[in-house]
Image (tube, rainbow, N blue to C red):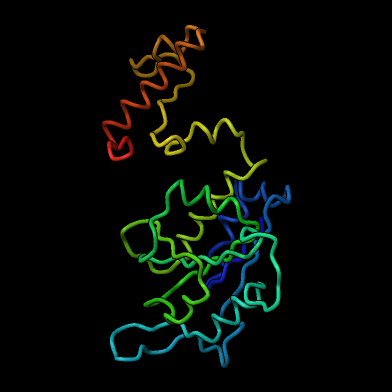
Length: 229
């Protein structure tokens, strides 16, 4: 999968993209990530301006952002794609978008090329949304920019790509089966008077599996009953 990140602050991604599973996925050529600085497409380094109609804050101008998007190969004429999943898919990280969930992540896995726009200030010129396929939010709150939400989106997608982690681990994740995960224990058996449940030591895999399913249900019902609906 190719991932292009369009941002005003590319150095914010240096740590997250060079550590842990994202770094391993890059080294294994499972993903290719490119950072695109919007300022490189701005005249006189002018990337923002005051909003028409007045108001506080600044808005990212359409021209440099359009050119940054165009540089990824998204806006091309007379290009035939075998199917929609071969087309670059443009995402704008926005508090006004659909809240990220496992269903959205699974759908994004089908695409070979994601282009992620990180907004800033009061947002981007509304006309750029004509070139955006989907707006995505990571929750009902506002951050200083779209860089951290983009990191969340990339991490959540990449970890589910084939070859990144054990497929069984993905299938046991919270939300994968519309429920929360079951409790996990490791050594030592006794920790500050708290014991590991005996069923996990029984060696009876059928009973262990049933216990885990029951615990996942109990946890989901208690913490996220909305998922059971």
